[in-house]
Amino acid sequence: MSATRILLGTLAGLATIGMAGTGAAGAATCTATPAQTEGPYYRAGAPQRTVLATAGVRGTRLVVSGRVLDPSCRPVARARVDVWQADGSGAYDNAGYRLRGWVRTDARGRYRFTTVVPGQYPGRTEHIHVKITPPGGDTLTTQLYFPNAGANDGDFIYDRRLLVRLDTSARPWRATFTFVAPR
Ligand SMILES: [Fe+2]
Image 1 (cartoon, rainbow, N blue to C red):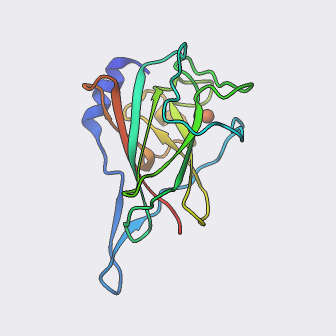
Image 2 (cartoon, protein in one colour; image 1 turned 120 degrees about the vertical axis):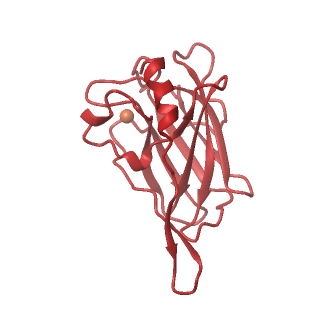
């Protein structure tokens, strides 16, 4: 993805929480984050760590953060947020755990990890794979996308509901996304 495209993307921030209104009892409801295919590159056994962009990893440094909420819009503490992605040149590490790892949300449902902006690879626009597993809950498998990435519209898996909000004025760049996980 070019810096220009990403810069333009910062202006296109879409709400990442689908507020579906209020339920019969007046409680807030949050629309579940759409699930997407796991794809072929998930590897079990990645380490628990906040910094995925270890020394020598190619790509523009990026901090991804946000929260995990339940369908009633309440924060989910200790949810497991498992991430895997390509490096800035579109390459996955399928032998080791480069750009693979997981964190747990804090008491306010917050997660954060340091990574790089993923590159394109044949057939796919820039994306980050994620699995969200609330304590005792089902796993939500999905992917995150980048606003105004040139290949988004040519990628049949791409879903604009999964766009991060991107700030390229920060150093490192910052992406934010709120997940709504199933109970
Ligand atoms: Fe992928």
